[in-house]
Amino acid sequence: MDRKRGFGLWLVLLFALLPMTVEAGTISFRLHGGVSYLRGGDLNDGLQGWADYWIAEYNAYGHPYQTGAFNPIHLGGNFGGDVIFQVTPRMGIGLGTEYLMAKRTSTLTFQGGVTWDYFGKPAAVPAKLSVFYFLPAGKAFQVVFHAGLGYYWAKARLESHTKSASPMDYIIDSSASGIGFHGGVGLEWTLSSHLSFLIEGAGRYASFSGFEGTTTIVGSGGWSGKLYYCGSSAPVLAHFNYIDLLASPPSGPGFSFTREAKIDFSGFGLRVGAVVKI
Image (cartoon, rainbow, N blue to C red; front, top):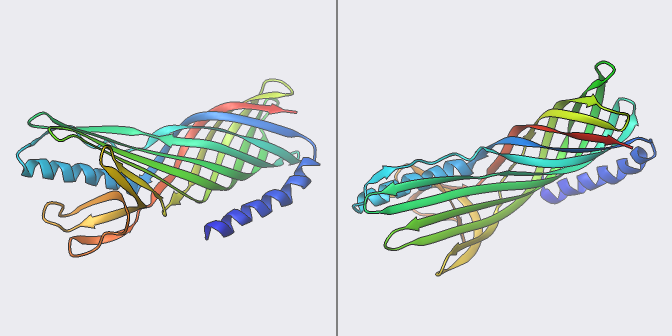
């Protein structure tokens, strides 16, 4: 779906539903936070390629690889909230947002005192529209199902720091946006007429390409461009796929393929929180 059309649809649904639900009566505020797992997509595959490249490069130039390995970026945190407008005793419409983030650092060491540290940090903030269904489960509990869509503003930061006789700091900042989908099931424990405790499992599908931003080599300048995922067929890079932000897509006999990188925020999480009813 085109980004502008998707965002327009989200706004139409928002303004169409808001008057109806506010007039219905009860409003609830949900605040929650927890741990989250995301797939990563080309981000993890491309950073693994960075490690494969530098191991081959330093081995070829007399600095054999010694220790370390790439640590995939999967686990992170999330926190956010929803405002739920009750339509019926069992159904509500929610408007919300959350902050998703993961980060992992990897370190490789080579003979001769050469050290290479690098990390990736994907993050996203969606504006979410959700439908909630409440199923009573006794006097003090209810099971809550929810599903919906969101418009995501996503960022990805990648850093590479080489410590050697010729140190180099290489930094990529990029951003993109798009439509994602989410759903989950939770349990609310009623503590009073206005306060409940929440534990919830949630999943999402949100995978985006079209990341644009800047590459900076500290002390040497930089450039603007797009984030690409590439396969190299050059002698040193044979069979290595990597990710990089470049001013134009790389091409030629040295590359087996080139496409815009897709960072996958799809995954699941476990979170706890509180529900305040007014």
